[in-house]
Length: 105
Image 1 (cartoon, rainbow, N blue to C red):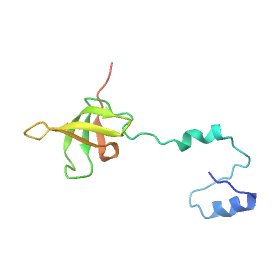
Image 2: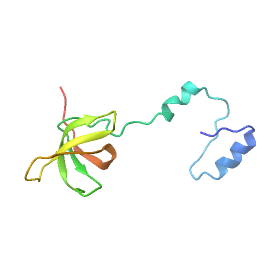
Image 3: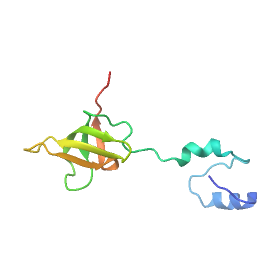
Image 4: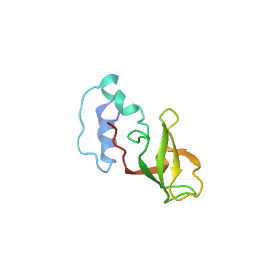
């Protein structure tokens, strides 16, 4: 999305963008672009009971089962599979990768 006072400025800006192909001329209303501006939570699609893998931090590579998903704070509470004592661990949603989703009926 590029906004400019004159069309020539947009043409110059597009030439410097590597994968820009076309310029769609005209105006857009805020309602048309509003959904691009609101961030999507990273915990969307993760449900309780899903199996995940930690991709960062001290437990990197560990597999765990999701116990609770907090979409407001973008956090996941889980229990590691290979721990001797099941301790709930809370991490940010972007620190995990989904291995198997739990199907809800």
